[in-house]
Image 1 (cartoon, rainbow, N blue to C red):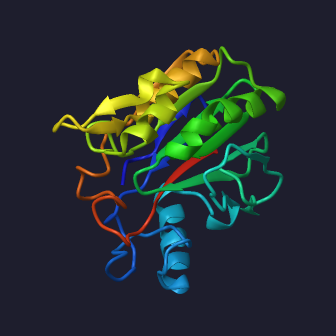
Image 2 (cartoon, rainbow, N blue to C red):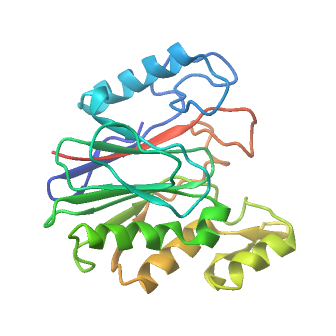
Image 3 (spheres, helix red, strand yellow):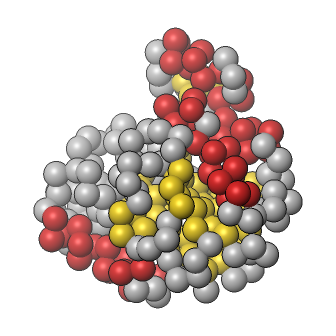
Length: 240
């Protein structure tokens, strides 16, 4: 597990790892946080409680999304399910926002001055639909200032490993050319991290950093490309 880090003053975030804790059996071993895979429901609940305990917040405070590769954003007013969305924002100081991933790009964001935080899940389709800029736009509607927003991009499959057919790479590159990439073998690929960073900077966000780890290349992270079926990592953001 990545230790909790200060995303912004008064705001913490963290990215879980595959083997940090947990009780899930193979192939979801051991710290699967996702309910969209056919893991035992009781195991996932136990893992979610363990993750909350490791980071030091109450598991009943977490807001979870039913991620559907959209650009839809929910404004969370209470813990639990945020619905069929891929981004969530809140100005409440008692909620923890979570995004799940296993190659897709998780995003955590905060404006500490406004007390607004956000989380998103940006896969290839979500990147094409521009879910990251949609997250920022909703944060601004909730009172955030673009100049104060800090964003960290979590672990995801890298542009050298995410091989796709040429038409899929070109579909993304048509509006975000930074997302076009090649594998080490010279075949077409997508770089979601580069694409999303470019989208955020074009939207006016000046503070963007990245975890940098590739899920496909890192054995202690879940990767759908490397092993399917598999579990899901969680990316959390919360105010202290």
